Length: 484
Image (cartoon, rainbow, N blue to C red; front, side):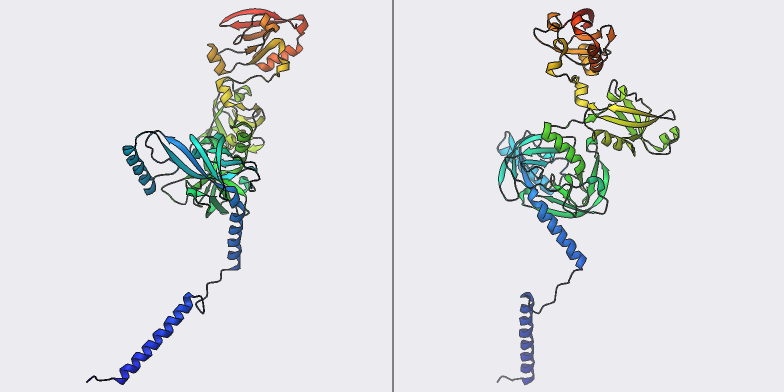
């Protein structure tokens, strides 16, 4: 016979009833009915969040995904800018296994981001992304895919332009990187690893970081907004949706440290790449160093500046009279805070422009006007006199003898102008002049450069004849040239 306990039965009924009610209420909570209410953020925070969303929505269509295919000649560890982590090691080991099973040349893929800079198809990315690429593929915000062609690149600033056959593309507004301040919001937007869009948020940590040995980079923008190999090449944007930099360098293993190329520098590079496919840098032939406390005490200096440690012989600075030991205190009317400032200010000028410099020599102030030139052409000896085809007196094309040309001619100390071309049937051709002949004297006046040469010819009377002393392989002779 089973004993019944009325009290226990009653207790069980109460417990079951409680559990049923609790279960129903729990179901209501997950269904979003009668549950705890979400915290209401402050009005300012909500507005700020909306600002971020608006910026990403506005700039996002200008950000593209880039895949660059290149030939792998051998087993390669990850690039320096990407660092080494578990994923990199895994890829390396997989590649090693593939090489064991199928030897021979293989291709690798670099995936990164880019930014549309013109409506007609110019896309900006990092040089290290497309360097040595055999194929570049660009995917736009709407998913459309284009084959791209590298239209120009500059390894010194880690920037490259890719051209795609597209029109009506959206170009984002550009800001002023000189006006940014540490503590301001920074938004890094990219399309990493083939994903449509990636956004990281941070602040400007510093705006004057050195370029890690890449002097042409000048000063970089440092941010704690996450920059990785995938969003490299994408824009760094301010809270107003203006591009203030191009994501470039990742520092590992430390996290939260990324660098972007200032947009003011980017603007100049992009213009050169579009116009001529490469960057022509203003150069004056100066080697500089910062002023240490000991140097400042030695020269009894109170303010900032940059010390001239080297002057390239016959370079623009040398021709303007600068000397080692000079201290540059201002460039273009602006105080020279340090060496990098002087370099940046000079490189902001166009080739052929004059840079005004203020300095101190032996305790006394001086000024100098330096005409910039292109370093590559100067050192290779290819600076040509700018005479139009119609204004080549006597059928001669000449150029100033640079140190590079003098070395090629076998006379390191040679001065004057060298003949680069003689037109058939011209007075110069009739006088048996030829390329690489050096014009030393014109009507008894020594000519040191193309400016002297043209000045003397301008005063001459060609119909009466012009007397020239020519140096050919170390032997000199005279010729008289007359207009035909």
